[in-house]
Length: 76
Image (cartoon, rainbow, N blue to C red):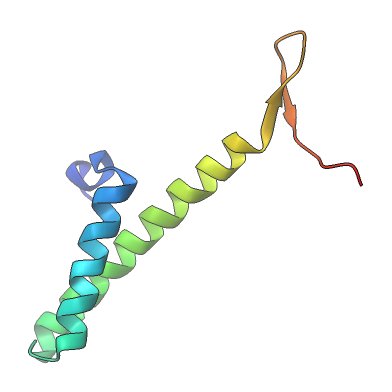
C-alpha cells in the first residue's frame, strides 16, 4: 500500500471501492484489468475495515472521572 492510499480518508476509500465494484459489475473490463481492479478493491476494503475497527475501539472507550480511558460495557 502506498503512502497516498494511507492518507485517504475512509470516505475517499469507500467511494473508490464503490467505483471499482461498478466497473467490475459492468462486465466491460478485460480479465487482466479485472484482476488488477479486484486486487485494488481488496486493499481498499481492508483499509476501510481497519479504519472502522479503530473507530469502533475508540467509541467503545469512555473517559473516567480521573481522565483514564476504560472499555465501555453496557450493564443490563
